[in-house]
Length: 430
Picture 1 (tube, rainbow, N blue to C red):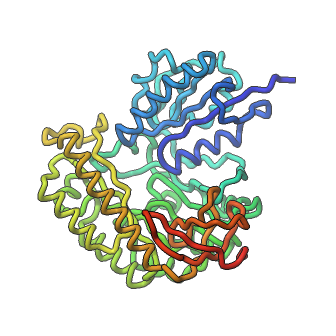
Picture 2: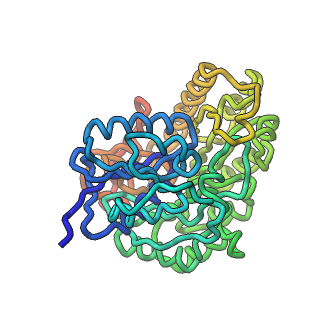
Picture 3: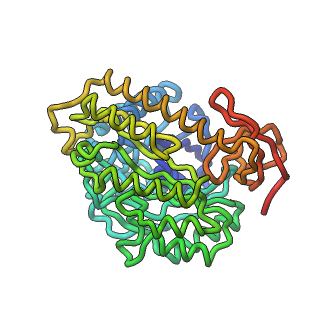
């Protein structure tokens, strides 16, 4: 009998990375047990993100902490940093094994026989042509399941390193998506979040589309809730919005990438839309679904973003139909076109602008939630004492009736100190 081994996981970045970690865990050998306590682990698998400087810096800090906590542990680094910058890892004394994104799903085999694995030159991620859907579904005490249905990106935004970390766009076959959703529902999940590196590209390599997939999900699955991660305004049609408006499964919450509200910066970023396209889209959503939550990503401090251009973005957002922001100070990524520019914004200025936008986002979230005081909303119980409503409001509740993942109805009572409070209306809705 093989001795039991313990392995810990640390995952940075997006929902796609979390899904990839879950996929690795689902294929671990039987004699491996996943634990949180790094001090007792034989292995620590770190799934990296390299979108920003902050994620890189946090990884290097954690790497040092792990080896101090457990000097005997073997550290395996994978993910986007391992794919794009293996030279930063290869000579680090605290890194024992490196597996790039192209070979990430070999990790169960690597930790089973670590002495037989040698860190090699990084693979060409663009050699991967098809979507790998070989994994077993996991049912843990999460409130919802993440399902990666698309990977990679065919576009080249001037600030983004992700295409070089993930390769070309590729999609899960529709029949497999339906199969996975039904399996997840059968295992106890009431909500599945469809994720991807560029979700709006789903199906283009298969002769189909995201909207066609959602139409099939609507007919061929029993899952109550489907939620979309992030979509691209350049690929979002009014017909698509109409479909979601009429859908009985797709949640009325949208995360639509903006990055900047000025055409000058959008052009320099190599984005595929102008601000009027984005604005028309979210106004259309609000007109069709007044209760829908609409959020976006914003990069502040992009090279060439003057004070005037920043104020233009700020004023647009303040007066828009948006309800929250994910704010990112611009980070240089080696190899991108933006990194070669000589009109960079000072770090302190980027921090100041980020602070201003995050404060605005908080006001927007509070204002949106306040619209529903005295109203009843349906949502999913989280692991903590919260319910996340279908339109993406986190409501603090005191009741312990619900288990994580249960669907229920909540009455919004008040918004106080940047928190939304409510009470249970009924134990459970099915």
